Length: 359
Image (cartoon, rainbow, N blue to C red; front, side, top):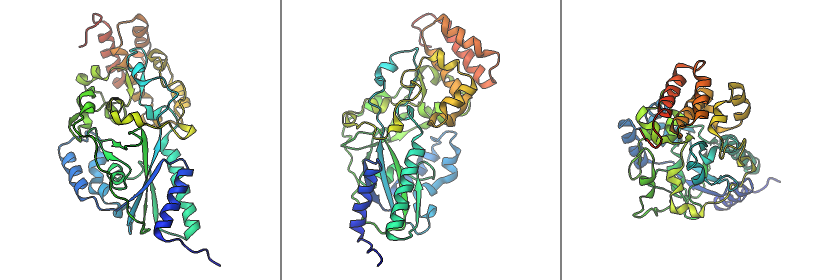
């Protein structure tokens, strides 16, 4: 006898229960229509705030129309997975140590894309075995979707003034993933916003990238500069980067809702290779082979050795004048690519400035 397929509400409950067992903190369901978010995206693109992320413009409205990614899609199952690494050196302490490098907290462990994609794919396969074949597509930054808007509509949190998703019970230190599906699951109520009059994130941004509430100019964002930008970092933005060598968390660190942040639930998000407070001179001394070996399986691996070295050179330039720093920069200058040498020379010039000078 064929097992009876549960009603949609019961099926959704089973999905949420199984998702929790797989490490997801929350599951919600949203529809596929995003007209207001699509209009916001098009205005942002028209203003050029995507910088050199040309794929954003190339995908265009595809991001806001899930049914074009999965024909017949009716719903988006949205999930979140906590990643705050409680064992890591305190973020504020690392930012205050100019000879240490700051790596965004999400990248201290293994690549979340692989972890979440595997878990979501397993969730979808298990339910196909449970109820029979259905249409679905798993997404973890692997398809052009407006994941924060979908997560908001699925009740997982609201989009804050810094443009990250915030949950009342978990802050913002979590990853998002989606399953596009043709299952007619019951919808969740969208989350309401609770930023109120707070603007701490706007004031905290080192490069003034949050140009207005809910509006981020990626061209000024340190995450964009250290991860997405493949050319020279604009000179006027190098000093404000401080010792941030991969990503930036400042807007989240000051958010009052992060007092509710939850510890990472997956062991793969534990700190690897002491990246929570690495010494800049030691990192800069890595060979390309060492980078390849140590960053395999990390989100950092995607930017490659040259960009990683470029970022560290900027941080070394922002450190107080120090003989060991100058020696580290000079040791790589002659063999450096044109891109890296430009940043090394900038850093060496900075190292020759009087102590305490900012420019």
